Length: 158
Length: 192
Image (cartoon, rainbow over all chains, first blue to last red; front, side, top):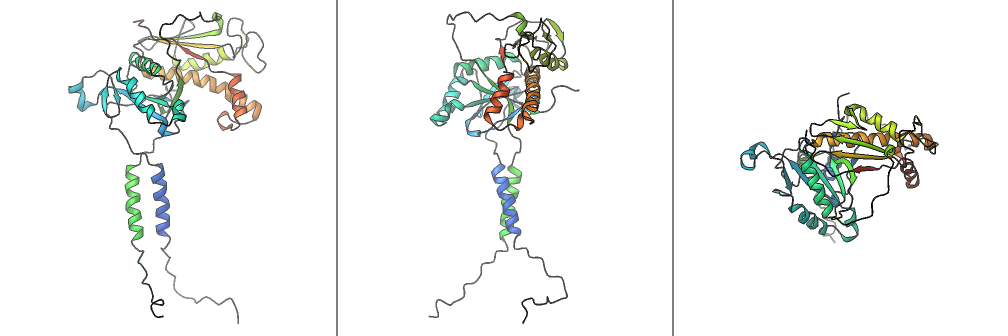
């Protein structure tokens, strides 16, 4: 008696596809984890400036976004071409920022409130006057940690 | 008993892959891979016109003034400058070591520039008409100058890139060698 039976020769055995679902599931989970659903519909043109010295924003639940830019082409006739501020899904004025920040802060648990970051996503054509006004409002609302959202790339042609 | 021995028919799992593929394609389509990143800054607390003690006097040579006008022109230390030269100029200023107290600096030790990196302050003022693009570019170049110096020290002391440092103490030490002090004045309407 031998423990090692000679393999029956002849014919290529069919490749088992039983592990195919496992592979697909693996991919599925990867994409499920990395996926970020876009929460707001952009009403403003948002071409962010380039920068190289950037840091990733971690802890998404602690981040609040403020969008700044000219209204999109389809909205130009209704809202004009002056850069505007967008909070959540609607245009807002400078005065609304304070209230918005307070509301957003309330949604964060108490012990993490001091880590709240406000990400300013401004279009590169926006003038600093408006950005400074926003920063001033944020200072009044005591949201002092800010992040200038940028794209990764050189700031000038070398 | 015969009941217990009855064979349970096997469920056909052949379509499992199809279902998984369907879900996979859904997430593939909805996924946005862009990670939010940007330049982190801290704003000073708001103080509504309370009479505070005058700030301690700072020597003119320890200040690196950067002015940006509404035409996106740059005035650095009273000289016109192109954005491409800003990084090198900031680096030279920070690493100057005027009072010879900084033994790790490699600067030119000019008596008319900053005393040491701990005293060096970058002062930034822009016009209300300055474009956000240039503002970010200036912020980026200034941060790059600091990072370049920190990177050098990190390599020298720990033989590792500054970004790869994991020990809190080490990061603190490097940050302490070149503290990033960028003072931003409120924007003015300089015009022109």
